[in-house]
Amino acid sequence: MDIYSKGFTIVELMIAITILAVTMMFAAPSFTTMISNNRISAAANEFIGALQLAKAESTARIAPATICKRNGDGSGCAAGGSWKDGWIVFADLNGDGAVDNDDTVILNHAELDTRITFNSTGGIADFITYNPSGITTITGVQVLMMCDDRGYAKSAKGILITITGRGSVMNGPDTGQLTCL
Image (cartoon, rainbow, N blue to C red; front, side, top):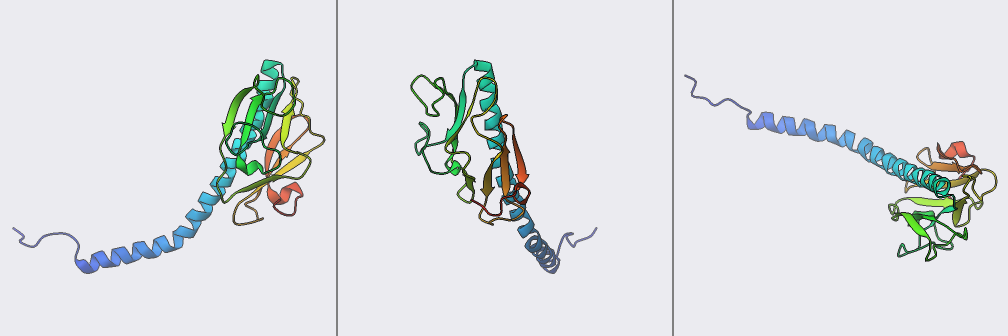
């Protein structure tokens, strides 16, 4: 019978902890980059989903549907401001781009993470309205740029919206935009 206990000595434990700490030191920057990339990609995809929802609602209801910049309390649309403050998708029965008493709010998306900026190139004012045919009120291809606190780099996302209402996410440099807006 062995009277000595089996296990790690304090020296072996300290060596294992040191190896773990060094490994984590090299892995941590990769994790933060991955988290930042996922944060901005998720936000861009959520906006694309809202565009698709507005288009689907306009054709299903046979009435205009609008996506607009969300105001501070989330009760309606904001004139000016940024898409970063969130957005609202609603059945816009009179097509005026504002939430009225007879309009139905379908989606109310909260403000984005404080590290993200999200603005349009100017061709999209404060809202995008889809007609019952699924065509938008915008002209040509318009771009919205989404960047985070890392600035304009390969992590920036551009959301292209066509007159037919189709939205697609691209890397920032691929949109032709040279900076975050």
